[in-house]
Image (cartoon, rainbow, N blue to C red; front, side, top):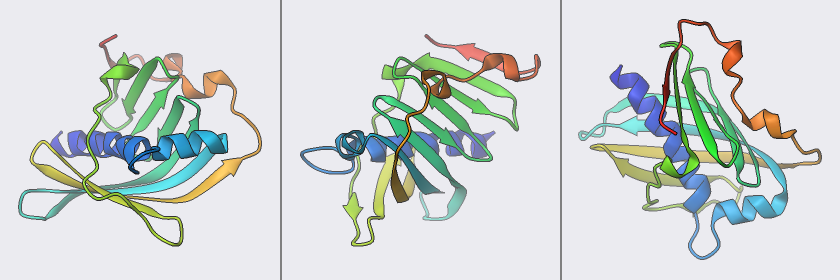
Length: 164
């Protein structure tokens, strides 16, 4: 269960890096200016001793205020108003208003010459090392429902917590 919590925090820290990676104009502002965007990410969760206790890799899609983050462990959808966080292994779905997304502050966001962005975040006695790469502007827009989680597509055994 702790590993799943760490993975969920890692995914949220990814979105925080996307939202706040640069001083002045945010990376999110830069991405919005590109239109519809895809990017790859990796996150490592380190405990107080620096030991890696969780990792996650995946892809994210951003279009305006909407985003979709996908990995084997976690699916996060946001249509700009609501956010759905689904963990298939534990069959849990948490739905919240978008404004409840934690806004963790980047301590050292940097853009390398190859365009890769790295940053670190601290939360819940953990440090998250985030790397974003492969940022691509996509020609076609996604339909609005691409950023909405289809609750009818999961088993009836899924535990749903609606915090909206």
